[in-house]
Length: 112
Length: 113
Image (cartoon, rainbow over all chains, first blue to last red; front, side, top):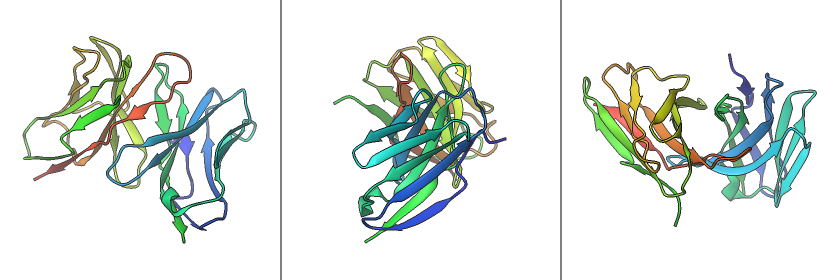
């Protein structure tokens, strides 16, 4: 059973607009969440994270929002650029030894 | 330049053969991890190691083995017992301390001939 879910396999956005990627989780014990960006045939690159004591974390064009009551987090990219086109993975720190539990990813396409 | 190096980038294996994937890091990280990614899937944990000479099974350890004789190295062996080894394999490491992100290598794509 998936503990971290990314229900949208793909998302297409126009350049300059906002991209919103969503992630839901089932375990209320998760206390740290991360977003990774992945290009084909490369390893994921860490983007941004948020701990459960916060509801928002911002880094340049990237903002992550956490709604603990809804067990939902989202990544906002503003403005979106063609170079943002990649697969985005949501992950939760859930294992007893610091393991990450990943969603299946959302493929973002930013069109010029 | 610190980072995680996985080699080779592409690997081909005949059925019935064992094959070892290399992962080296010079980040002085204590913990290292192996993941497998299949098309349309997230990353699934195979094995992880928090310290030298110790490692633990992840969610899909069957058909795989690892060793951690040195802090900087965490090789993964895909044995002939792994029924569906064709996948993209990713190695990661992380520093000690709360809420540290994992850093990934560029992966090895394993294909069965």
